[in-house]
Image (cartoon, rainbow, N blue to C red; front, side, top):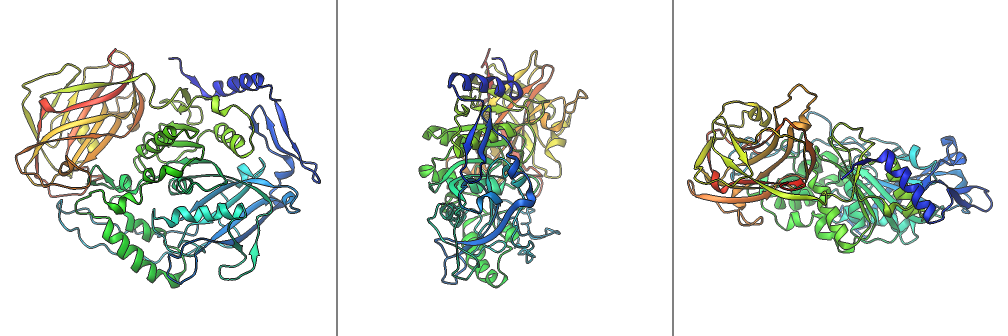
Length: 614
């Protein structure tokens, strides 16, 4: 299938779509009184409106929107701090514009280094972890009326009002942070309700002088990255009227998937020892007089009793912080964005929601790049998405390909289009193991038998990358294909089945799929070497909600998905399956010495390969 980059496909498709639909190449509506043409559209894309481009003429003000909840225990509904940036032409009320809205717990400041309030990961599995030191008091920063300057330079000139709000219990917003609790969905809902005249805004956090959003038509689009990308989805799951489009970037769609993996206590990349309560301490920048109550009720009661760092099992606490469980009312068109090498908020977060929204019939599109955490879609795609759903511009965005993926050495803003993700022509190909420890065994598509068992010894002193490069070590098992004779395109979610026996009742299980040779001198970078990764707790071999201690020496079979990927492995490379125990960058750190024995005949790797076995 021919791959066409965005820089070619969008202009060509736009011309065809606009021609067939007989849509003029330049159009907009002239607004009475002002004489402005709003929006200003050319070839389906919003263009800057000269009268809106001088920021000295923008009006900036703030207010507090009342919600339907009280999470700081003062007997009053919490009010969210909201800031507005809009063109001065909206002041008369004759011009009503749609809104680009971002909300965040980070705007007013976060905990500062040293980060000595993370969990200590150095302890045996299944044991009570060492007590955690609570985080320091966050020093609130920021001045009224400006909460943030994000997005205003981009979207105000294109004909939008830009709105920001601080999340509950952060900045000048009332309430308590909950890190994924219901109030974090209802807070942006309240702001959208206010923009549509269904909620009340006030000039002060505790007064009764009201503020109306007379300058908007009530159509709202939300975007943001990471936590700020989670909250557009959280708002969308409420089904709130007026939220017409969202563009989440690297969103955390499940706090269980962020802090756990298939029953295993696992940290997000770069934040070893982080958990929900750590993040709570990191963002709690709200009213100092309410912090003791919030800490007692939210952090030290609800969170402390729910996170379960001993078993890592999925429970009601985690289910309530999993947005996949809240998709029933979600009907907002969604352009999802993520990166395949995001080892902080891993790429499964976006795919699980994209697939669920698509199954519901919600208009969807997905963009992936090959970098790390963050990275918005190309501006052309965002522009078209908001133009279509906030201004009703019939620009044919629905006819564009559903998936946009930046190929390995292309510019991030110039992705290649595909009919969908995973690639529709990807088929599962299963690889089997042949022995070779403590060096390298084989990985073949031909089923084998009587390969026996091989054993590794857990030692968290060695990083995963060091183990992958080692020619000889008893701290990992690695199985490698022959050199590829032509490029191999992987697209989708790999799966691994591992049959193992442990010398202890609990053991970490870590799996990497790698491309070898490691950093081979031909421009290969770390993101090329690591194809995908995964982690699991063998104690959850039967159920994610209930652990069962392993009987030492007895074999158990664990099957689990690895992180999604779309990668073209170059000819001359080899694909390797590496199995080891404790992953120094992600898992708990038990004392070295646990033995993990793998039954090679009952262990396999399944990769989604474009073209399948052929």
